[in-house]
Image (tube, rainbow, N blue to C red):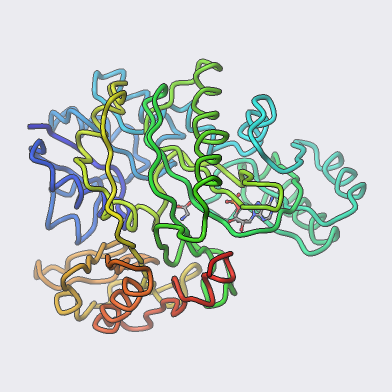
Length: 430
Ligand code: AMP
Ligand code: GLY
């Protein structure tokens, strides 16, 4: 029986804890810091996900054998290296491996060296060079902060002037601090987007089904970017040949490239791709599960997540069978009014119990238990992901929105068009 710790406190981590709980091999489960949802499945530890010293100390104190890391930041700060040094198995890459997400310039250069399909790009650490490059372009580019910016570091510019302003804000005014001192300027691509996840132990790679997420706050892909307002899986509009090409030419190719560079990588590799007329191209890499993608992928996983994570962490993924249910899964994020900017917390959430039903799972994100130990309060921007599983996307969508109607909290906001036919068409479907 394994003692396991999950790091993080969002919907993704609730989904990980929920799936781990189904394993006959699971002993004690800890989540740091967790939320009101994980409290029902595990022991929550009051440690922030980027408190590396605190996490290492807690893992030792609780004799944890395997740590599964949800978010990117602790990985980029070297949590996996520290835990390994203590002899604790980790699902999540080393600090070097996490650079694939933590430095967009480094990731682009890796793609260029190994022929992994990517848009034309250039990396700059001097604003004057970035300016003259942008002036020389014939079309407005995409400008990205090199470092981690919580999803706020990419700017798809409508004009070259806008691109120059972004360079001014990031590089001279340091609007995103250290993260934006180096920028990547790249060709703007067109096409539907897809999230391709895979398990890898650094040698073997097992693909997960495709998923699609919705990054913008409002219906019709309007409004600011968020962490993600909903998702669905599978990406039924994507043909099998393209799916295989993504796996071979991107995911497996990157794992081989990292190994060749001597970079240790164990965990989830999640490239975000655009399906362009010239084929799939990498927009970015993530060194972890997507949120809310994890919430629509893990309910489709038939096997034992603990067994898979253990094999990944110990480099023994070869021969492990991973099966997926053919059913479709749709997840709708319910967020606090004002998110992704200012929002209120501590508001009671009603209807969580009555929203539950056959094939419906409510994954908590920004939630906390009140002092009475029963009332669930809002505690973050994204509050819950309501997930439904059914035989088709349309059925899963209807079921998820039926459940959403039961849940109320003051100033709640959610998108009405997650996995909607018109929206699916807009992203390349039906
Ligand atoms: P990223 O932070 O790299 O994931 O980018 C965030 C979003 O910006 C993506 O989901 C795309 O919608 C858009 N984007 C990023 N790179 C490009 C690109 N080269 N061309 C067009 N859109 C892009
Ligand atoms: N859903 C996008 C992400 O997790 O990066």
